[in-house]
Image 1 (tube, rainbow, N blue to C red):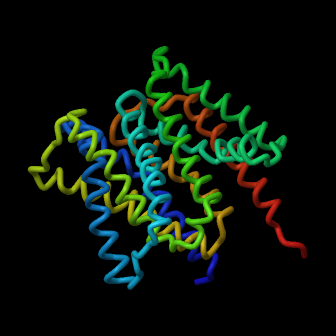
Image 2 (cartoon, rainbow, N blue to C red):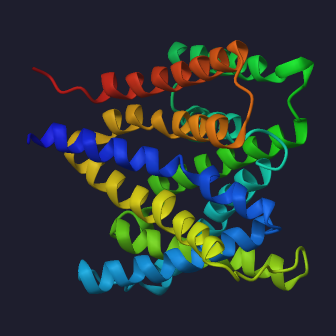
Length: 299
């Protein structure tokens, strides 16, 4: 098996795994679990499993300096806010549509880099913004004239923005550049769980207690597949085939979420919604291909 083939196969596994968020979260919602409870257990179980994997299996150190910890704390909070607002949006709009809108975060990264770091906003980026706007407009009126819930849309846009800020912070914070990815991921989850713990302690919602094998299965599923499996496989994928092709494979994330939402949870799929998904994915590809052209080595 070639290096590229292995990378593509792992990339498909990783991106599809991340798209399984609705598969495990939506049944928990129906059983009375609130968003903060689901995410608290997700991060807690992922921390335990990932910590054991990193230290016992991969033999990596989790040591960081005090200076690095000062940057990791807000980074973890921003990352957890992306999870919180995405999972909240599932209560207002279809999980498939939410996952597709979330995928615009590379466009937000390009805009942030242009506004705050003076990177040139190219025609490709402008074109991507236009395509994204058109794609979201396709979602506005769904089946039987039902309109897109604006609060749900706002939540998923905040999720995309939070993740974009997280990506920019990783790129532009010197203190974080030399932290191994496994160590970084562990501490992001460790500090991120504080958001859900605080919300539960403050009475934002009553913490739900897992009491059946099915519930534990869903919690382990959401901690394992869209968290640990996705993180590990995508890290290897980027090393094998590079960030550009990895980003293209990332289109399978919303596609997986859409398929799960339509087939298992009965969410609507109309021609307009399908067209909106295609437009948004096309917009992201424009940004990705721009990056590829910039980094293409001379022959």
